[in-house]
Image 1: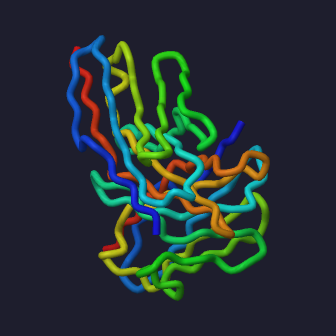
Image 2: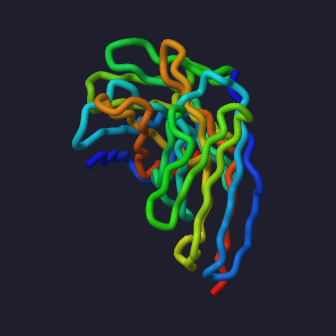
Length: 116
Length: 113
């Protein structure tokens, strides 16, 4: 159990366009999902915490109007990168926290975003 | 806020030797300490975790120790194999009205055959 999917796995878009990334917990309910950004050979940087049915909590320095997060159900959270710029190119990974086991997070496979 | 430091950044060992990765955290309220293994281009995988009411936990060749007083926790891998080569991240998790997990910078482990 504890499988998290993420879609798409890779996306290339042009500057100025928006991209939506989906994160789904496939076999468990996740009241909380997290969105991370990872630069090459670096650690995971928490961008925001997404709680089902409420507004996301963004980390300092992360623009909430640029990175729109929606957590519509107990199994789905989406991250939309709006008006993308080349500096937004990165590896975006979501994780989901199991409702029945506090703290444990399971990661999605990540989305490689390239903005041209 | 919580800060997690991880050492070393790179570790190279011979196959069969042990590997130890150490982390420290700053917030004494942190109560959950997972370790993740990330292979190149793949997702982090939870390999072992420890909660603050436990001092040590072992799972086959992997063990984790926690010293709450010193705010240290360590990952020990015995009888290392080439497939253990990856980046390992420690993390500290805290619940202050909402869960937050802060990751260490990572340790790149190379196991030489």
